[in-house]
Image (cartoon, rainbow, N blue to C red; front, side):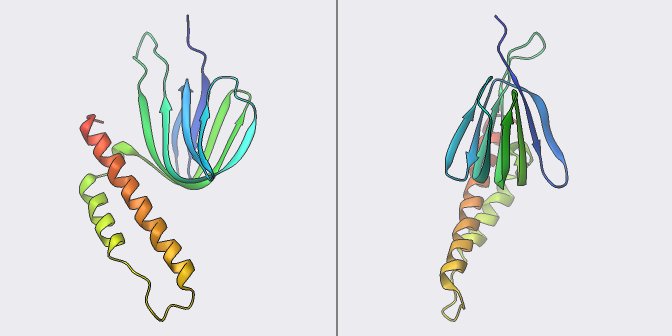
Length: 149
């Protein structure tokens, strides 16, 4: 029996990263993970910081598999068996270098809020977001390296 699929597109302001049939996608909505499968009801949601995982069908040419992406902000729309992700930032896991990601994490962890900051709470949130993004990039880069992606 053939797997039921939906179209999955991932775009940023500068490029299209994916335009393929998928059987499942797990995406980072602003309020938690959201799963999408064939015949998912329509929705529009804001994206947060997190990992997008897209699972592909088994076909005569390929044995399914998954791709992983770093996502930071944007929107997703599901309608008529099509998922469109318009991300502010999206990077395929295979493009993330572990060394660069670890250096970015070290730099982010070294940041702190200056005592004379005008808006310390806002600056603390920005630093925390940068640290979380760097941690995610490290995890995805290691995953890609371990799986030979």
